[in-house]
Each structure stands twice: as structure tokens, then as C-alpha cells.
Length: 105
Image 1: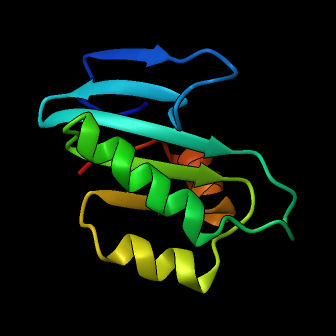
Image 2 (image 1 turned 135 degrees about the horizontal axis):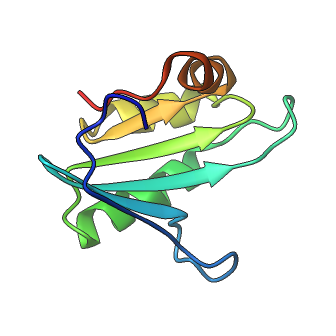
């Protein structure tokens, strides 16, 4: 996590993770990450985003990232846009992270 003021990181177990794949402590608060390793044509839909909203709320997170190797449905994008804490990271943004590093602004 280049150029990131994250203080601590934690990865969750592979199953029964309650919609969370990792946590990070940022100077602004808790970051929660949910990763979806999908084929390019297997988009992430609204139900995943709705569930993740609950996870963010229950954990009082500063920000939540849903990261996928595919993309998001229009309904998922619309649902995420209703909450300023959720960031959607599709394949192109994921590649940018890989090449340029992650910045949590």
C-alpha cells in the first residue's frame, strides 16, 4: 500500500468471513475490504453491495472497498453511490493500483 498512512492490516479467514476479506486501520478510521475474484463476464451485483453496506455500518467503518477482477452492474453502482463510504474498484482500477500503488484519500 504505497503512500498510504495505514497503520495495521488484517486479513480474514477464507470462509465464513461475514462479507469481509480484510481490515486496515487508517488515520481517518477503519477500512474494510471485500474482494471478489470473478471472471470478466461475471459482474458484481447489487446484493453484494447491499450486504457490504451493512458490514460497514455495523463496524462503523470510515471507508469500505469492494474490489473485483471483473466489473459492477449498473444497479450495484447506483446502490454504492448512495453511500459515500463505499468505493468500487473494478479490474481497470485494480490494475492501476498494481502499477501505481494504492492511495486512500
